[in-house]
Image (cartoon, rainbow, N blue to C red; front, side, top):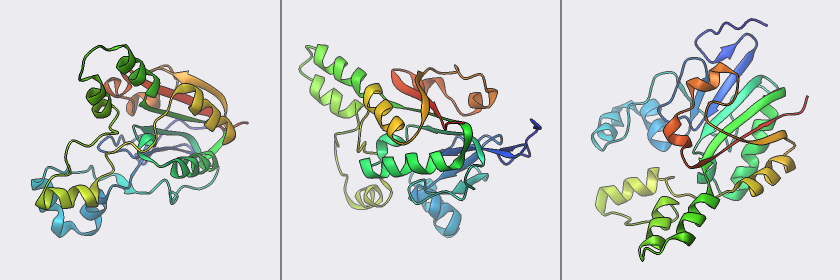
Length: 222
């Protein structure tokens, strides 16, 4: 199979798909995001200046709108790999399981699913071993399970409309391994930044997002 890509995240006959990409949109991947602010930028561009003034980002032009929960416009069995960074913890448990089913469907037999997210075990150990009276508050902030303030006025409205910043379900390696196996994935292992030999993962992985976090890798069976 050819290793050349056409600038749309398709390598030969295989797609490399990244969902919940944010501002990380390398040309070697098909990049999807479903944030409300991104949807408005694409579909209601007259409102884009207002969002930019409020601090929302200017998204790269090659990002496609795609909601992993509802399903991406990706053909079944067409992807060599799928990747997401700090996405799965923002999903409710039923949404998470739906996401795993979708990713499994998109991958070719032998295709790789790789991701990184906060490590609940690390956060809990840090909290439990601390004698700092503020340890509980730090845990709530670091885990994004707590909310300092809902804000007021326009800021409150924007948070309500665009906010998926809270973490809805947290994971450790044991529980994640069980869920991946239940979804049909095999070759499940803990992953570390840069330890997959496919060079295209270097285009989407960022060391800062892997530090003290839980990386996992698995495959759709051959």
